[in-house]
Length: 212
Image (cartoon, rainbow, N blue to C red; front, side, top):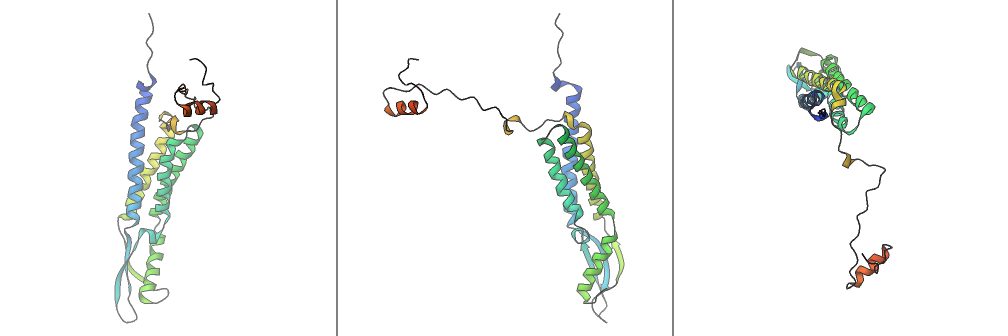
């Protein structure tokens, strides 16, 4: 009695690989989108003197004014997520680690609040014309937390790639270069009634008079 063989594509490892692949793609894409979108929003607000004796004015600074690191790392993480499918073995693990580190860096940079006060002071100096203008009633919005959450999603995608990436498919072989030349298609026999076909056969090094 012949023992039935189980196809690798139908085994538990393949099923788990498809699930983790879908989860990593969703987490990575959503995380990068959240970081890039939140970086363009207002992260901190405060009040600064409009001019000497002119009262105060409300000012705000966006995420890219506070720090450009989260958006830059989100782009790196998104590129790493795509590159995971172009490599195998050790290369895939290295790219997955880069993805995870990018997410961790986004989360850390988004929650480091020191840049917000400096950015507000710089903007206040531009509004009032006074170097070192004071900023009062400084408040933070929820957008840095949205960016940090996006970073954690990128981190999760990287950890999934490290854990399950070996079971994920790679780029199709037809898009990869190989050292084996493609088999040459046999040319159709030359038609003796068409002189141009005879010349083409001679150029290919064939004998147009040979019997098929």
